[in-house]
Length: 204
Image (cartoon, rainbow, N blue to C red; front, side, top):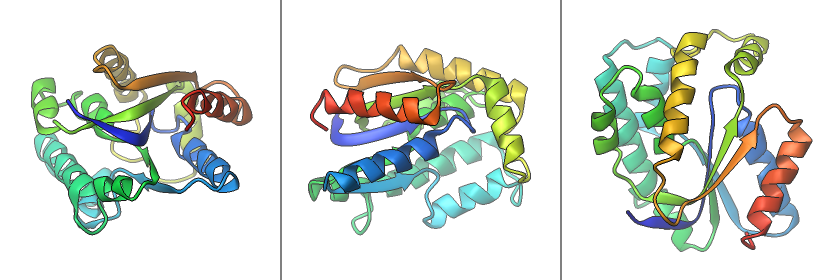
């Protein structure tokens, strides 16, 4: 499996703090005048917007169809000739993504065949994978604090299975993927510092 150099992926349960940390890292790169690009999955592109409508329970479909939609959004996210990740990496920028195919394997495999989810997500691996491991109970509290209607997967029992899938998948990473597992119970500042130290050790 190929590795996308200078591609950093943040993963974790809903409420783990990935969005906060990716923004903090962006500020760090901004300060150090490093060219970067932030993105996320599902995307804001046409297929990604449909995925979000399913997550928000505006559209009802099957777990398998949702897994296929995620994979289609990801393929467009990577390879679209106008805005794809591969094009941006070719421009010499660091690309940071809030979620990637690891999320599909962790989430969709709860209700779908794991072999199916892996098969339709045969995409290149990132050079860096940062997994923020936050307990389910903490994630649920953070989700509650948002004051928004819960999305499709925001249930403690479901997220417990998702975390198990994540931990299993982290043991299967191919050579060339550099993994950092961060304790999500640390403060935002300490988490940020640990991520910076890790990436700095690779001169990134």
